[in-house]
Length: 324
Ligand code: F7E
Image (cartoon, rainbow, N blue to C red; front, top):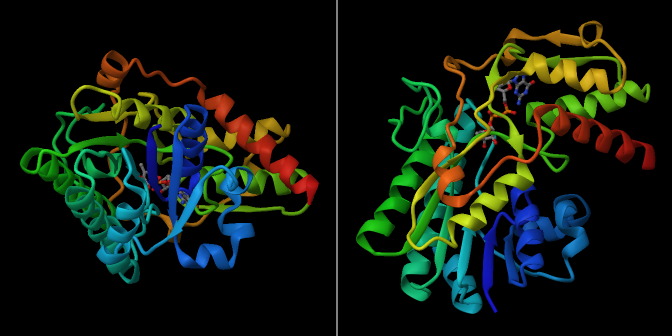
């Protein structure tokens, strides 16, 4: 039986991946922070329904000793390193935790796998933010990196470390360069969930305004459950490689607003307030991915359109609030 270890199992991607691996007959182990067990109702919400089927380990991912202990206990055949600080923050206060969670943690994991489970296949979660102020669009695996946020820099440093372990230590490490991917399990700090949850509240008369930053910002938004299929496929290949995972279609935050409000039969304008304080510095080039390599090698395809993703998120949030 294949045994998988997932860091960040309680997050959006971790929860969908755990479901996928369980359906494929894996024994699934996941790492969560101690605080998650203190507030399981909220922090383990995405995996409540599968808690009985998986094995949870408490650990600090940026602590080498803690990670080593878990790897030596689990002895995984596949490891998916999804845990990271994923909000693209521009605040100085967040920089050191970003570097610890995204770079030091990746080092702890790779070093632990090398020492204790060198046959284990590793997936590293890279990000389109590594391209930053990209010189060409769309970007693919050969596009040069030019990160513009500390988040992008931390991911790129960890990505180079992962490549180093692949090339010099001969570990099977594959990296996904994932563009934005959304679902009803997305965190509320991200713009798509902020919109879907607020639209649901407006529809139910619980809220009457939605404050946003730059609504002309554009993103390549895909469907999270599709993206975990690509992660799994990367580890089933003969050799480890890197893959861009994206839809190749750009939409603006304004497009998302129009779609989301249309689900409840409203026009977005009377409810939406643009606050320039929320604009991000240096957000210049809209990142759009070219996933042809994943299409050809992994036979991977996005399954949902932008409109279907937005509708699913808004309808989920309405049903969630109605239940409350
Ligand atoms: O912002 C604009 C904002 O925070 C999307 C993470 O998964 O994808 C994600 O990072 C866009 C940006 O995601 C608000 O300026 C406008 O242009 O939802 P987001 P992100 O920063 O793109 C990448 C690929 C990752 O790797 C990350 O981990 O929306 N925007 N108004 C806003 N964004 C937020 N959050 N809130 C607003 O009010």
